[in-house]
Image 1 (cartoon, helix red, strand yellow):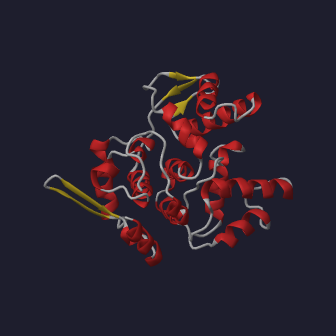
Image 2 (spheres, helix red, strand yellow):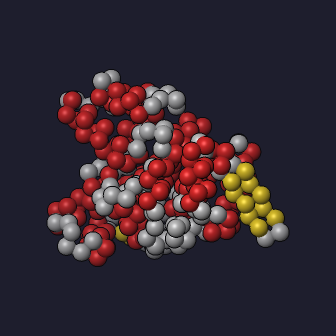
Image 3 (cartoon, one colour):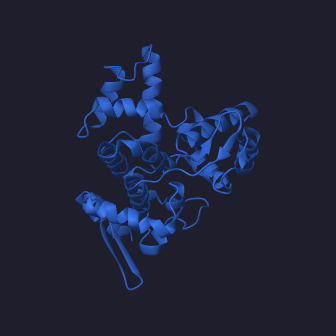
Length: 270
């Protein structure tokens, strides 16, 4: 089973949880937005080679996020884990950490892609955001109405309002929206690192070639399918992937980023 190739609901097969995808009914945006400032502080304080226990210790014991109480540290650790996984044993997080280290300016879109793979409410909200043309307005009331349509009678009005606000904050932080009280649609500035990581996420779901290039992951980071290959060519020169394009055939190979057991799992599934 592979992901859908349009911007509709993303199909996440059970095997993908081994890579860091989540099948949970609720995601991190039920409590927080993308937490980009905290993620940036954490990545600055903890080395790329850190393990799950190191991230936990940095937040709880060392208080690298500067939280005022231990209770707030625990809550932050819980929520940032929900969003990103914080474990290099998960391919999604391991490559998020690597790309963020190699291109820190791409962190907003890198973080978005990872959270998108783990948060169903964030995925649902993108279906609405993507329908907007640049300059069109998205109000909190519109987001609330859309979420109620997708999740009928699941959330209270208060929860819907909070969720819609947090999602708006996230989409503004990633460059998909701008403004505060009234948010308007904008297009994020895509980078080779952000585009490559988005394609990597789709690759983990079994998308290949032109299906991958035209998938929801391309639209998520604001790339145009016609420019994806140029971004991936930069990624190929950086050693992030192997790219072959010619004769109407596109081959995008991320196997070099996978651990042996991950490659075996992916090859055994597709």
